[in-house]
Amino acid sequence: MTQKLKITVLGTGTSVGIPALGSLGWGKCDPNNKKNKRQRCAILVQSDDINILIDAGPDIKNQLIEHNIKKLDAVLITHQHADHISGLDELRPFYFYNKVKLKIYTHFETAKFLINRFDYLFNKSSTSQSYFQPPFELINIDYFQDIKIGDINIKSIQQNHGAIDTLGFIFNKLFGYCTDVVDFPPESFNLLYNLDVLIITGLRKNPHIAHAHFDLSFKWIKELSPKSAYLTHLSPESDHDTVLSICPKNVEPAHDGLVINI
Image 1: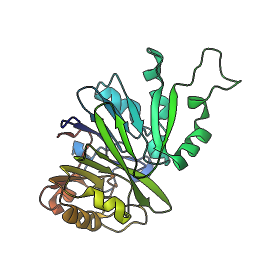
Image 2: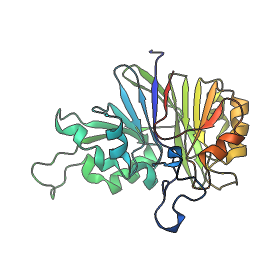
Image 3: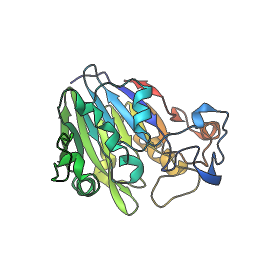
Image 4: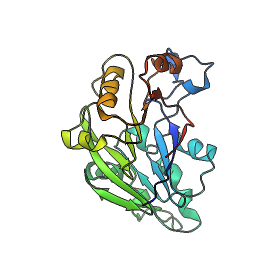
């Protein structure tokens, strides 16, 4: 198992991104600070040979072009909310040249949702154009499952996100990614201790029914004791420098384009 991982944070924003459309705009975020411009949440995990994308929201094409990503080996989907899946169609060109179907890994419940919304990406239809071939392969995974993609080992965990559950992921027992979470079952939480890096939801100052707020995130991080931790899924209320000023030692708000080497 490789001990080298490169994590690129592609997006750190909420479902509407920052700036948002309409009068919400930048919210309380300073538009002059480029770290406040937040696309929808996604990350890229890379070893020397493998590229794994986590989530594909509406910004995913621009996010991947910005980082010159020419190849994907797999996509992990945390859950079915639109800000995490609505850009899946944009990934079709990865199939065009080598005709190898892109593997999409997600939980059974999310898989059913994807088949309903994006059936054409996985199944050939009698109404499809003759030249069209489904570019993706859907792979169901369960909570607490071990997955190996190339030289990267992944452990899936269960997270509560209000009305639904989501997938979190631990890579090579070094890096945990826990977006869209407000609570953990004990089995999941116990797997997150003493990681090198933890990226976890930190939405805003005030509590929320589906996302951890700052005090809850800081409480978790203090107990879990990662070497470093970053907040993601930041709301328009959460100005980067203001959040940074209240973060404990070794914790900071992530920002789009952040690169972490482990």
